Image (tube, rainbow over all chains, first blue to last red; front, side, top):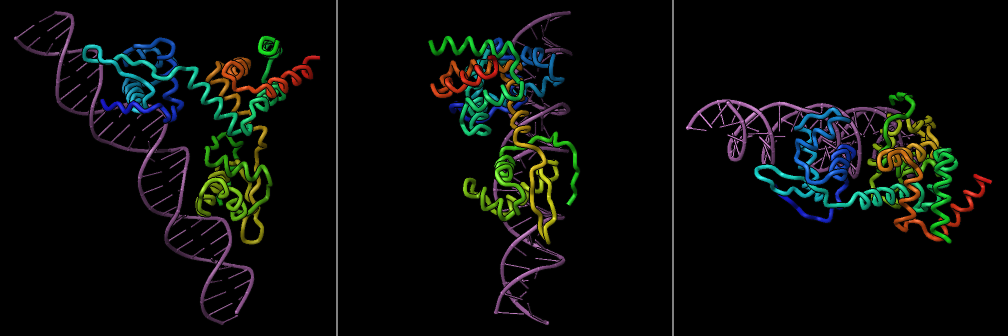
Length: 129
Length: 129
DNA sequence: CAAGGCTGATTACATCTGTAGTCATTGCGA
DNA sequence: TCGCAATGACTACAGATGTAATCAGCCTTG
């Protein structure tokens, strides 16, 4: 299997994300295991999961460690990193890079529940003593 | 031009978004005008812009109002609506639907500047007297 | 009136994505 | 030991996307 080891910069697609999520939850799983987990939600065949795994390895997002005659797949990027990147992309594309605008938007469109607001307030207290 | 008038549910792509942004900024522009504006940033040909405009009309995201023998293009969806939808998608996909988690993440990863924090705090004060 | 330019329509085409089938191999169980 | 099930590699293929060329018609300008 060709393993181009680049620093991930390739984008992870929606379908691929479902696979990543399974492996972030529990690393070092075989294709069959990943399939079992992911096919609970999305109705995919094992073949589909294998394709996605291969593409993710190709993209440098997963490592495939040989284990007998199969592979154990493990994320090469932390979920935090990915999530951070995607959040930043959204903020950049839609809010001119201003994160506060996003929060304002969420608040204004009622996307934030009372609990959310309380949680954020608590967070703020912690961040700015 | 076939104008399928559906309620937009088609996704707007990255390239298309650049076009939408120009028209949100100033509606009722011709293809040439949009091109002039958008080609400042992305190095596209007029042909490309026309394709994107056509696809957006097709998707029901733009209206094409005849003006002589050309069209004036105008957004059919508000920027707010689009932004709201995309934000929600992100929160759902990456934060299990919990908007507060997104804010927490932004805060923890230092994506929020001191100014951002102050702004959010002010917002909160306003929202919960 | 004729030539040229602008306009939308149509077509093109490579790449990416989603979804999967086939094939050769190989290790395991009977 | 022998057949089979599991596994990775390769192939497939339709639809979306990015990027653009070409074409036919019409409006303007000379």
